[in-house]
Length: 379
Image (cartoon, rainbow, N blue to C red; front, side):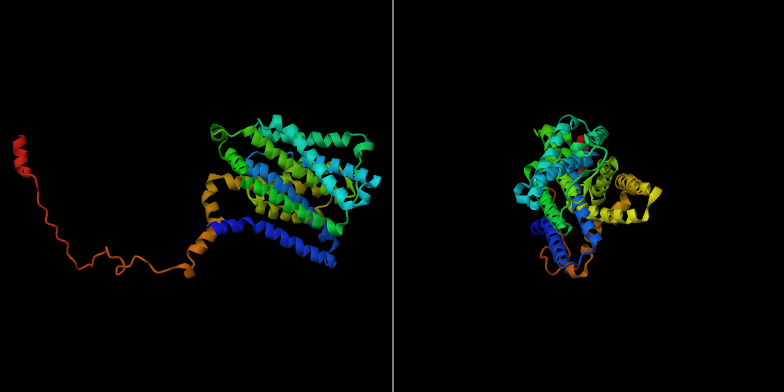
């Protein structure tokens, strides 16, 4: 069992490495269409966002609706720095080095915002925390939209340098792998066990001496950092960054990825993020004009349906029947190849007796009184 558990820890890493190698080879051979390259870029950004939000929603157990706000901070700060460094010819004009610097700066800027909003907000719980984070996302977006045009483009989009699309998705996959490695190692550490204990019972965690505020702030900051990195990567995948992209609908879309993939399931969140990107691309082609609003409505309906399905007591039996774990367990349990002979056969167990044997027990009472005599003496 321990070997299987250790092997499962590396499945996500191996899948990401295989995807990176396969798509890199296909890209070098010019076998990837233009639309596929764009989808791969969007998929890597979505996977980073889903994995980072899964840290807050899945492992910490808190509802955050402002993840697009942290992404917005990283996109504008990192995008602005990339413009400055590119125009000044810093690092010899090396685009990769400039991008790495912008990724770090954008992630740190988003992490600082995570600390600022986390200190007062994480004392709240449930719906109140969701409202505060939602308000944070809208405030950040409004600040960048109303900033002077010389700084962040104002109401118009801020122009940013576009990275080579033939290699940007490779950097994206590497960043996804780094994100998953850091998050999973954090969850498996003693700090991660403290975080999951807070999710299970905050009162019990406080009673055992766990600093709940400290760990909540730590998770919130780490999640915001990776959201900022995703924002910088997004700015490099576009020719301009517009604040309209980071509205609350996008935060809900990220939340759908996490819920669809399974609460606290990093691998499932990555798969769900890829599926949502493919679905989003398909819906953009099919729903045009006034029908475009139906796309956001669809994500909201999917989120409501998933929450009802996973929490309705009336569906508990159905969930148990269609559970993948139970199906796999039943298949392995009824596998004829794994059925062995009963070890407890009559001819193998010496404690068993044959059916034709008769047991005779000679019982003698040590008491000098018979029941009748004892009854008479008591009278």
